[in-house]
Length: 419
Image 1 (cartoon, helix red, strand yellow):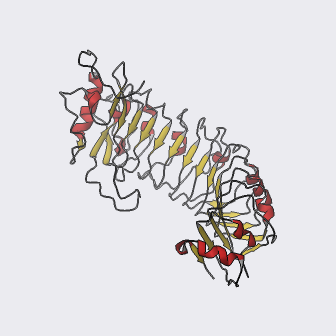
Image 2 (cartoon, rainbow, N blue to C red):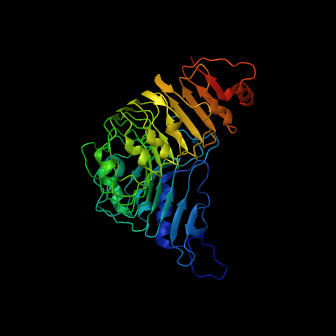
Image 3 (spheres, one colour):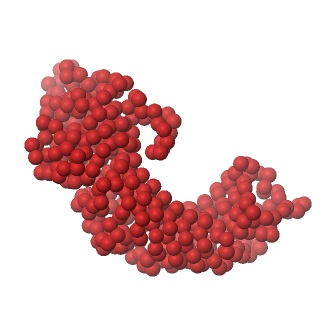
């Protein structure tokens, strides 16, 4: 139903004039050195403009897909040539188009989100930090992607009240450090299911907040920020069925709770590269839908819970660079038939596998340490290995050793050991 609007020569239906004027206003405020908007002519039906999608019957604009693509890959902290991308201002009227559902202006070089004459007089410049409402509200906008606009200045997120139907928000790469109430503001969106705030210079998650009224949240990605608090209670008290949590590359500290009753459908829990400490709670071994668990590069201590071996859906278990103690044996991996990546390493951990154990999995990658005087014999059963590593390990292969037969089959660049 929502496809590019293309009319026959005898059609009397044309692009809605109000929509057209809002888009032309956006074009006039944009710096377009590469001619990305060259088809946007006032003499042409706006449903035929590049990046514009209209409803087949009403001809109202429903989507604006204008991401800036580049060849050399994505990386917020790497130099990227954006000379062919749009710059200038994003008028708030764009977010308030009456039937617009999908807006993608990702990876451009916009500088500000601004009030303009097409808005309510009481709607202010969002980039200056003024209270933006009451603005004219959009009941249609579901998808908003402004990620990768590294120079876009947004002092607050209160403007989102004009788009209360948002389900998907990606503001990754935008500096949001001045917005300290982002949790409360985002929780006001009743339909929000995916929230991506990667590398936004956030330094807090409202640690004193016990409850956040996210009712539909499934994905929360706060990786690569500067959040320096304990993981807040509101996250573990969510009543929605959250499935993906990314909190890696922050400064989170403290211990994980002993119970996570509201994470029963959780699939991804990524906590790597933080300062979390204490034991790994047994409750993690009860999250039966968990497929990816990354606890690497923290300060966790104590033994690995044996019940992690009950996670039959687990594809990746990564627990490198911590301070685990105790014994790790085949009992930790009893039912991990889907496991593809196993990274477990800590200076004081002891690996003690039965010599005749045959794992229920076939791994693509493994990193263990310390091991010795020989690698675990079960590695010889892993015929799909693409990478293999050992930490704090020293051993040699004897003539006829089974592992010595496996070693030449591995790409040397993907095999390493440290002493």
